Length: 188
Image (cartoon, rainbow, N blue to C red; front, side):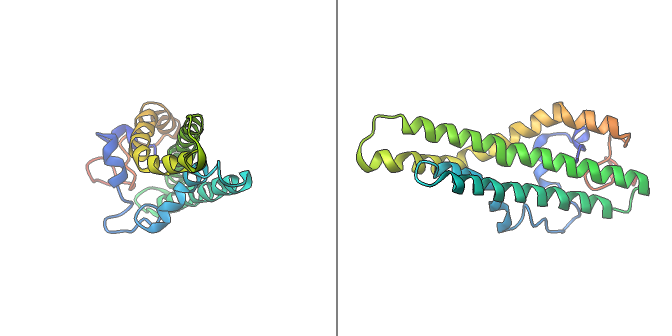
């Protein structure tokens, strides 16, 4: 539930905040990250494939989201700078925040956007092969264009809504960062 955002100066700082200096985040720093985009690819291919294949793409993306959330909760739990009770709460907070952010920014919103783009292109007066493949090609081409605006928008919305509320409810210090340290590097 990484509601550590109220003390982050800008939402653009968040993706660069690693759990520990030099620690690799396999869900953001490796090719595993692309599993989060499988539902957008599935939505792009919706006009050409069976609906079950599209549904399967959401299962893969959802699995990625759940695995990332579990990883962030475990990393927060392992951070020994907090007393045990606060660590439990911090781990739940980090896991919940990651689950919510990834669910919105990696699955729900991009899936809906690509779905609507593919649908709209399918309504264009095209003929022959263009009518069959244009929605899929345009949908695939739009994926890289929508990622960063959606990511940033989800950060802004969560920074203004869920993150401050969950942090306040958790009872953790408002300036506790993602890494278990207070804002200026001192331990909690």
